[in-house]
Image 1 (spheres, rainbow, N blue to C red):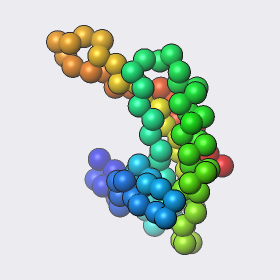
Image 2: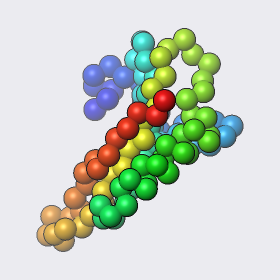
Image 3: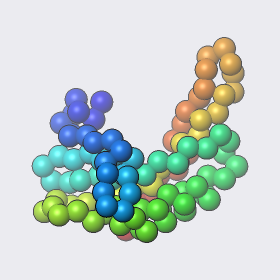
Length: 98
């Protein structure tokens, strides 16, 4: 979907310090996303902090570019509430890491 609105996308983008889950960019900005998937909403804050720490430790925001770099930590709940319809996925938290 991001490509349909003009973004270039890269998944599992390898760097010397680790792998970024998702990168997407346009002419002005580069977005770097780190996802954490959990089964229940019990530990959303903990996983959000874990994603933010990983972004900082692996220096995911570091790239030779003249674009504005925006790093995002995202927690997704992947809960099987009703087996008839399959798993329900929802974004539980998203936070910019500065």
